[in-house]
Image (tube, rainbow, N blue to C red):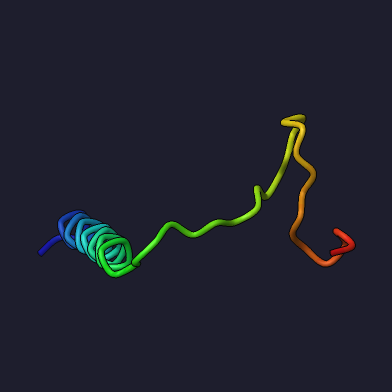
Length: 55
């Protein structure tokens, strides 16, 4: 095998495994995770997570 073919096979294998793990995680989670927005950016909501939020 030449280097380009090895790279393509490795690249495709990486993404297939990553997508399979994502699908497995989504299929086994029983509810939607309620998480605060990482950055509010003028949405009117104050960030509620992190060490400096005061909560």
